[in-house]
Image (cartoon, rainbow, N blue to C red; front, top):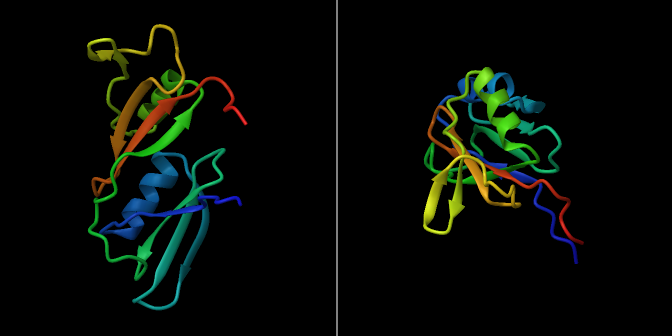
Length: 139
């Protein structure tokens, strides 16, 4: 049985501000912006190369704005991904990795998969974590 994650809901206070952040700054592709009056709107966007999309809107969740934490965006080159986001105006943390004694600055010196990270937040405080995976996942 396959269980494919295809959509994550993001609670936000201002749909248009969040839509602009995700499409103009984070570089997500706009898939849907559908409204049926003042009580319902759904905006679906997909990170480039992802099979999973995010949705924000009005009338789609009762979660508190900014309450989604640590959603991972897996990238093949964390330095390039961070640089692109920063060039688009996203406030991304410095890159860090887990060393023998805990967190250390910079990319993992051995470039081990799943061991280099940087994070950012959307305007409401929903947080994202860039994580580097350079090799293809095992089947």
